[in-house]
Image (cartoon, rainbow, N blue to C red; front, side, top):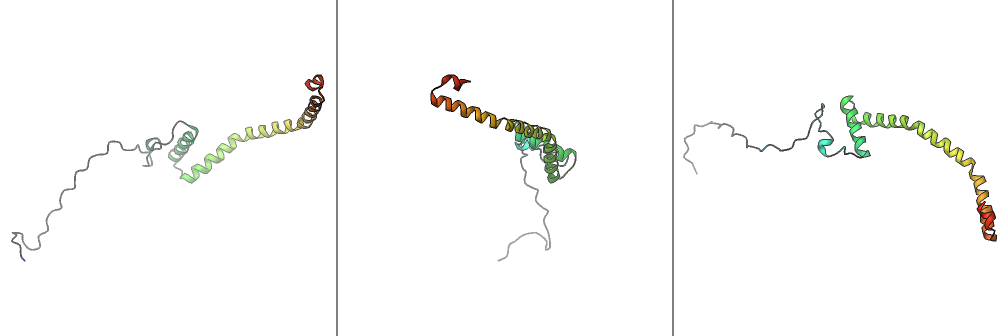
Length: 124
């Protein structure tokens, strides 16, 4: 079967034009590294986890660190910042532990007085 075409042998036609694609209405914002920002992806909201995400992204972009270094560095920095609070908490727990035995004895005496029906001794 032969078709009647007036094209010379060996003729290669031009490439067809690419199809027209509609532009996306909302493109994500990009950081200096060419990555979309967390806020443009719907992350880094105004809650504690969002604040941590924003802080990690800030260190990743501004210091040009890889993600693993940002995570490790941020965790280390937070532990160093919270160390005085941890030390104070442990010290206060030790002070409270000094009063547990005397308080336990007082509570036992008050319970015994209540069981005997001595209201004056149980209130003091």
